[in-house]
Length: 371
Image (cartoon, rainbow, N blue to C red; front, top):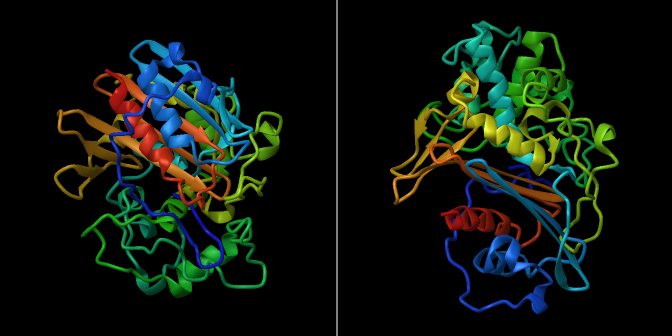
């Protein structure tokens, strides 16, 4: 996830999951939603998880159950939730972008351009501080030992808390890598969420290919899966973009990710993300299969692939998931590849809203609600 501001650098990497909600019955008159479209239990979940957010909050959802795809959107107007058709609307997806960055890496591996256990200095012409050894896989599964953010991230007069990554350019990143880079723990001993690591991965792959990050995700992912509304270039989707909201519900600036674009710079819609989800169900997409393989075991229920977090359920099901959080948006995506099921949620709820993690809780609750 991404999060920044005065004294705030990023949001927590892992969320607490909530699989229950109030037993109170929510009438259609109370919330303006249509139970017949999703079922009373799902509508009740929506109401209970979204009731605290300000007017003009929008939430766009997709429900995948094998070959059945349902879209449902809501918008808060005058204190009420109302159905809203927003399946093609575009939001910042924040750290879900890390899954796409890891997918670019998987393409490089499948095509023989790099090896997961290779260190960056074997491929990239970067004189890392103290000859640091960092593997490609460790950047994708957060085991690199790097901190969440570079130590020089908030330095300088150009730091802007409303768009905190914008002025963190390649020059600043290279300065950190060559002069300040420092491990917080022994690489490979644990998985600790790092925006720096994912951003560095995207940066290095762009250097190796001689292409911009946007070109890489376009050619290797968006074009292949016909994700026509997905991009890092805001001007390309300006007419479809839902305005981000701050904690109080006022419009807020979009984030430009600068040199760390691979950590969270993608815009997308739930319709596009459904196409990416369905591609995960196709075993012939070997690069996607590679991203979902466990590369590190955190505990008995949590593992990490390349980009994906992996959650083992008591039922025996395995869920691949990621969420995202920026100054004006919150997102979550959960897939059960074996059952070909998934829930995707995009919203314009600020990462800094005190109830922002309701989006993650809602996503997991709705996933559990899929029978």
